[in-house]
Image (cartoon, rainbow, N blue to C red; front, side):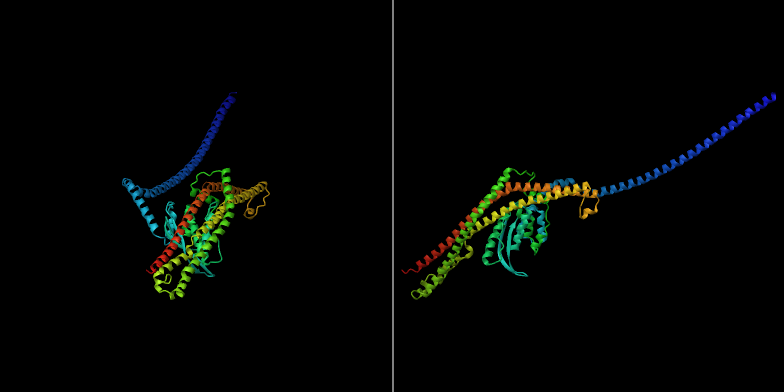
Length: 518
């Protein structure tokens, strides 16, 4: 019994010792695992820290480089500022003085341009950067027709010379170049009156040339009264000053303007900030003017026939007068009277009275037929009516262009509808695109076409506003002024013609009195 108890007592401590050993092993294992975990975590943290430091280093380096670049740019940009800001106080004191000097220089430069004709294209190009002075009195004249030979036939060139705010000019132009510049002005200024030129003619006889000179002078005179036409680049810079031997080719190379450019040109020329809606009053005014002009055409046709007859009768009368008093009476004196009286007693064949024959020649002068001015007045009126009606036609052409743009817009909208339904039949470059790409591209086109349609509407309103508020009134005013000017010129020419006739008969009377025997 005692032995068994003793044995049990010995087994209990042994079991406790084993358990302690197991617990110690578990603790040791846990510590090892924890140490491994900590080592792994430390390595991960070190690696992350290293990566962060590397990134931070790169960022710091990049920041330094950007800072250096920024400083260099700032230094570079400050260089002109430093130059400009040098001695600011002294510069501010000199501002008034410099402004006065600049004004004097501008006046001197303008005076030099006025006194000196442009000789080269480089000089002409400087005019593009100068603002035209509309108050400057323009002088322009067409004269000195000269026949020249071409590769196929002969042709006539006309000298155009004068003076405007950019200086003197002198050039030579063929008749078809006048025609070309007018067509260009019509295209550049839709809805605007552009003065007419005489019709084209196959014959180039002396009478045709004389008539063309008169009518081309009227064309230039009217152009110079319409400042936005005269000082347009096409006219004053190219037509009057270009040294290009082929002016038609140069004009043909001028790029065509779109509807947006036309609108801006109108706004700048007429200083318009707000475009008005077309009102019933505008339509009524245009309709009334067109009806009146068309009715006037028939009356002017009859009046022109009468003026031509009157002018022709005057020419025939002058020729007959010279035939009788410049030739036949002198022959009568030689053949009949010279046998009866001495030479010094004669009138028309007496050398002392040579001035009488010179006055007879002046009366006969074909280019001094003042009645041609009545014919010019009527024929110019006819051409002006045609030209002004042409302004309404070019205005209507804008509506036609707008309708074409609207048709294009409808077609693009139809194509977009088909694409959205997935049954597109688009051709050309669209066929190579997917439906989404076709849709995107067509939407962009639709946006641009819509802008074009809207712009045509604005331009049509703008042209209508200018036509009814400016062009029609100016046309009427200029018409009255031209009428008075031509009549005043006619009256002066008729008085001069009568004065020559009076001098002729006074000399004849004086010669007769000197030959009366006492």
